[in-house]
Amino acid sequence: MTPLLALNDALGRQLARLDPLLPLLARGVFAAVLALYFLASGLTKIDGFGLSTGAYAQIFPRAFEAVGYDASQLGTYHWLVVAGGTVAEFVLPVLIILGLFTRLAALGMIGFIVVQSLTDVVGHGAQAATLGRWFDRVADAAILDQRALWVMLLVVLVAKGGGALALDRAITPRR
Image (cartoon, rainbow, N blue to C red; front, side, top):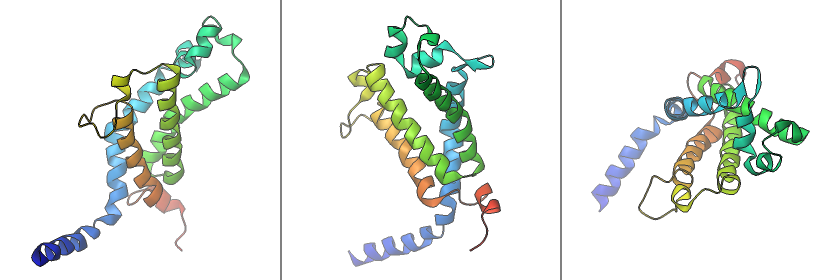
């Protein structure tokens, strides 16, 4: 058992040197796996230079149905949420990729994913198969499984910042 513990400790010491690369790798994985997903989703919410009716249907499905799918019948609150969410889908991924205000952008993305997930469950009535369950041997549920991994990736960025090759380093004075 002692040789195994020694090997584990030695491996840990070696891998600890890679710690500064973790945020850069997290940003790279975000860019490769999630950035285009969010940018494409943002594009579905605009129509020319304004918000599309689809944006309201995606974010406020029940309220939009209640007003006969007429966005002009929804209030300022609805417009602000839809506009803010749409802007967030474009701006936050770009900030993360660039490593600019990384912690705040990642925290914003976590909030966005939480709201997105709640909208899917409450607003769209996601079915049990889509929602999934944790600790069930099936790892492909779109909401609980996938989004938990998304959030964990973003938690790394909240905790560690943008890391190497981040614009945060260029604008933050050395302490």
